[in-house]
Each structure stands twice: as structure tokens, then as C-alpha cells.
Length: 274
Image 1: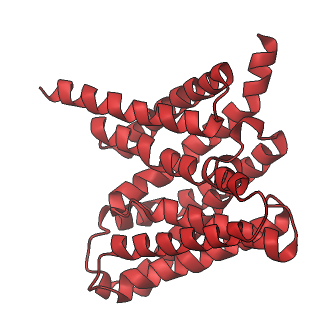
Image 2: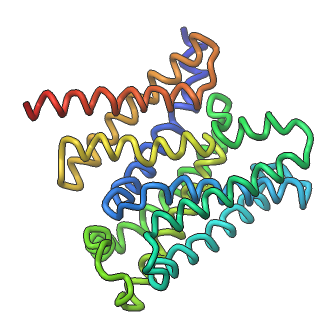
């Protein structure tokens, strides 16, 4: 039993970190109605890490790979910021979807050039959450804390921007555009580290599902964040225990239980309304 809990300690700590930071980002993403920007940024981060692995010969979790991964997400962040301002004839979500497809295609192309392609694809999608190390968690805690500090400093204008994200983008002032870029850039840093621990699909689930569950029951930011913390922690623990018990992928199991959580929440919300 002690061995079971010691095996789950580091993965569960990583899950709690991702629940809190990605859940907060998810609230903004829902408010902005750009649901797929998170998985797009996660895919760009994966492309950067894979490119560093093949071009520079470094491991995917090396400082060089992380730097290149974040650099790619910074370029994507700048693109999304400018696209909202200048590409007004096409919904931003469509632009994000196209960029995601391009990034996913680039990742598959790069993986196909190397050996053990199927292993790289699995790691890109679901990561190695069960084998995450404390040094990875320490890096994540540092990046998430720094990102949280940035968001705390700009919380009031950032909340106003997210609450009114459907306003006429063509008339945005430079200050709003700069704040938009800061949001996406910090998102990119957070997602780059999270993808390293859990993979693209699991990061997407942490970003969206707890935020959706919270939106079903509350409107105030603090209450929604509390719901996110409870849902994310419960689904993470259940998913990790399930993975250990039945020898399943930890990332896939956590994603499964997060999916079950949103189904249960939707049913509970429906019963509550009626």
C-alpha cells in the first residue's frame, strides 16, 4: 500500500498543479469562446520540442527543447493576437482550427522521419504522467507560480478583456492587443511545461473540462475556481488509481475520468434545473 501511494505521489502532485493553473486559463478561454486555442498552443509546443529533438539531437525535455517549444508558442501567440485584430472576416476559432491542423501535420511529418514513430505519437498525445519526476514538478511549480504572478498583476484588465472578448476586434487599442499577447504568451509557457508532463490531449482536458463543469454551477470567478480544484483533484486521483490498478495509460485514464466528470456534472445540472 505504501508503495502504491509513493508511486502516485509525484503524478498526483503534477495533476494538482495542472488542475489549478490550466483550470484558471480554461475559465478565460471559455469566456473568450476560443475553445481550441489551448490544444493549438499545446500542439505548437509539441512541434517545437520534436523539432529540437530531431534538429539538435537533444532530448524532448531538455532546456533547449523547452526553449524552442516556448519560442514556437510565442510565434503562435503573436499570430493569434494579430489575427483577432486584422482577420475580421473569418471567425478566430476557424483560424485557430486551421493552425492546429497545420501544427498537427507538422508534428506527424517530423515524427515519421524518425524511428519509433508510434512511441513519439503516444508520448505527444498522453505524455508519461505516471513516470513524472519531482524535478519536472519543481520546474512546473516555478513556471506556474511565475505565470500566476503575472496574471495576478493584470487580473482586473485581463478579466475585463475576457468578459468583453466579443467586442469589435478591429477597434482594439494597442493596450488591449498587448494584454492579449501577454495572455497567450503566458499560456504558451504554461502549456509548454504541462505538455512535457502529460501530453497534448491531457492538457486540453485539464484546460477545458473542469472549467466547463464550473460554468454549469457558478458564474463568479472564485466559486468557479474552487469547483475546478475539486473536480480536477477528484478526477486525477481516480484516473491515476485506475491506471495503476488495470495497467492503463495514466494520461488516458485521467482524461477518461475528466470526461466522466463533465458527463455527470451535465446530468446533475439538468436535474437541478428541473
